[in-house]
Amino acid sequence: MQRKSYCKFCKGPLVQTRGEYVCSNCGAVNNIALITRDASDQVPWDHKMALGKRVHIVDGLGSYIGFHNDSFFQDRKGSSLSSKKQYKFRKLKKRYNLRIKISNHETDYRSLMSLNRACAVLGVSDTVKKRAAYLYKVVAAAERSKEIEKISNHIVLAALCLLVAVRESGSNAPLRLREIVEVFKDLRHRVSGKAIVKLAQSLPPELGISVRVRRSEDYLHRITSQIIEQSEVVNQLESLDYDPQKYSQKLLRLSQELLNDISLRTRGGRNPYIFAVSVVYCADRIVGKIGNHRQVLTQKRLASICDVAEYSIRDHHRTVLKDKLKEKISRLVPSKKVEQKQQFEKEDLRFPMFF
Image (cartoon, rainbow, N blue to C red; front, side, top):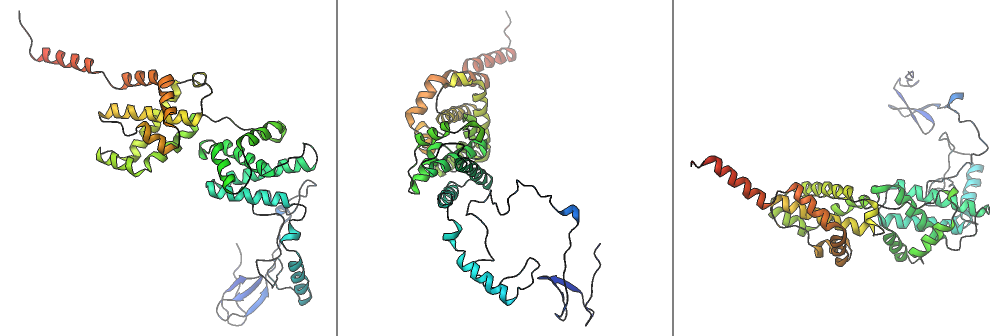
């Protein structure tokens, strides 16, 4: 436990601020605060370690002297530097501008800045952004050491690294290749889906740049969230006295059950996002059958919400999902004939006929 110190002038308690012990009552400076570290706290030096490497930060390269527009400098203890050192570091800060800072790294700097803007537009998490920046720097380092061939377009590389990071995160960031390409095009870059796929195939697998194949299960959370955000859907659910959150949970559960019954071989090479939208459409039909009301989602409305073609939903429903939907409904909802038969049997028990 640290021993509490008192002021030698007024006996008031001392507080540590900016590398000095100052009295909280009279404000007098009593002593300099010296911080010592144990040997166990020191990190052992390794020849592979490089100081100043900010691998996980996307905003620039290198380190800075002081703060932005700062002309007064202090050491690591918080004490002011001498006048000669103040002049020296002020001169260094003026000369060490952005142009010198990114010299010989202009391509990496601009690519990382474009990656940062794309991540901000897409709204991905910091974990995905840092992972994409790390993958970019791994490939760039391999290119400088001539382990791989020279990459002609580093913006395509940044888009590829973002796609890989998004795919690795699973359902936490269910973005499509088309959406990533559109964002980079909005930032005035020449990026296409074919160029990203071609670059991914040319890189060696040792670098860890492998695009994981998406499954329809990864998009279910995103689709159901988009549906309950629509005011038309919410108004219709309120007219049916249905809670939107419970409706979303039921859609998600039934969609997962339908996908569990459909093997990957049966799905074939269909677009996993469009197939997931079609599955959610079938799940909404099941909800309508269970609740004995009209379905909330039509093919036209769902196609408009999820930005897919209406005929694609219809085609998937007719070719793959129709039979599975009938089986699911028959298991969950009893048919009218069975209900009528059960009703007649109950009436026979209530009014037996004597012959």
